[in-house]
Image (cartoon, rainbow, N blue to C red; front, top):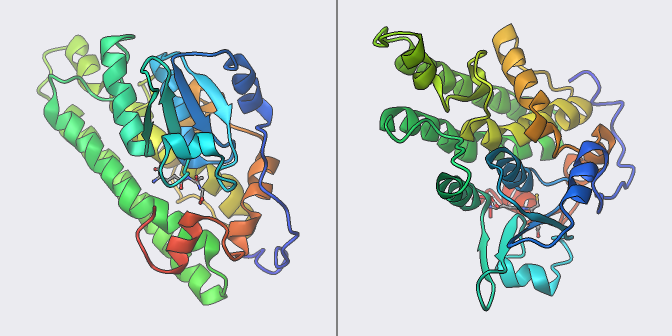
Length: 297
Ligand SMILES: N[C@@H](CCC(=O)N[C@@H](CS)C(=O)NCC(=O)O)C(=O)O
């Protein structure tokens, strides 16, 4: 919290309309028409979820950058509230569409089960492990995501301290759920041998140091935790909870090729989130919901 004073004035920076860094390279590699078009905005963490899932699951897509605050007609056709991410499916006539990042993630997982056979969940033969991962995701959606915005939008110091605590506690609870899955799925000693241990840990994500694949939780939480290390660190002096295990996990997530491929440069996030950090009026539907104490759109 030490640099609250230093960052006290709004520079009037605007959100970016074009990706930068690794994300820009990925955008350029996905300009060709495909059956599925991902309507995205470079800075948006909800978009990053879907974007990482496309990359990880090996599903062909075209990336199409839109400004969700200007609500172009083609966006409204695929997303009733004009929110990104959204998908358009050219194979249907008229074209089909889907919106809501959580629904898109489930759709991409189901599609991959038919096409690429890749997955971001534990095997269907292990319903309990899948449910434990979904429990983590439920926590991310209902606690971690709103806590991130409350912290970033809090203006007076007392509220910043309170909401900073809330955000940290939310990360710690998520860690508790990750530890629980690790303990209950891997710690039972029920595995017959190495092969079975490897099978059990599939889909538990990069929390498990030996795992190589991102899990649904890694992808659902990663975009906010990444922005926390850049945006909240800068505007609120935020630091991750102490402990090598959490740091190791997040380093593995952030360095994963599919995650990295969807990240812009730090400056893009600092610029794009300044309006949240100073709680400018009408920043977004999410910001309004936070200010009014309503559920997120
Ligand atoms: N519940 C939606 C939220 C998506 C969302 O809020 N996206 C933001 C960009 S990060 C947006 O499109 N904002 C436009 C607006 O506020 O009008 C989801 O999970 O997909």
